[in-house]
Length: 288
Image (cartoon, rainbow, N blue to C red):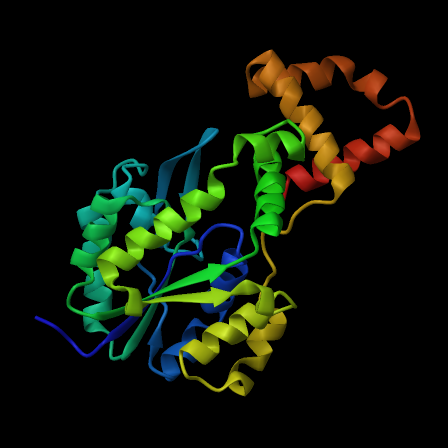
């Protein structure tokens, strides 16, 4: 059975201001609903719920509040403990069917990781609705630089940017291969590619999506001004420090060994004021 409801499925990819956009959607959820737009509460943990998710390099626990719908692709990938894709998607679909909203926005950058069978599963779950897939394009160099700083920040890489480019040289090809999969399954006319180059100043990606939804930007001006700009890349000097920490952890083999290293050598590391300042900056950043 088909319905008249429209779904805008935002699939990223990573490092295209996805988290900032999701922060806006989450903060403006009630106002969006007034205008017939639902940003679902399902596809993410509910109050009091928590789930372990297999996220490299470490397993992570996610609990409410979560601003994205990453649990939808994560369950399809088998990365969430004790939560099946059927349960996760059925709860979302129930929320969509029960709402009076005529339009739904779903946002998760890890949809872009899915291969053909999983994308087909997404299409099957959403088959009763008219689906428009939204992809934001960012020039490859700036995306690689942002991906590099994120990989260092998350402890997944300790080499130079040049090393990263050599290792990830296939990412450009991967982007277009993944895009083709989504076009093949949902239809090329149902996949919109938006140029992030025109949306890089503060808040304009949110404004761009409001235009996609056909809403008045002025209504959401306060939300544009208060939405959190998430996942910012650290400064170069912090990246160098984190690379050093990542290298130590890699060399020692575990995070516990890394802690032991710092405890054992803290007096040496803190002898000079500049080093102390750098370490304080590093610790502050890693706590974010």
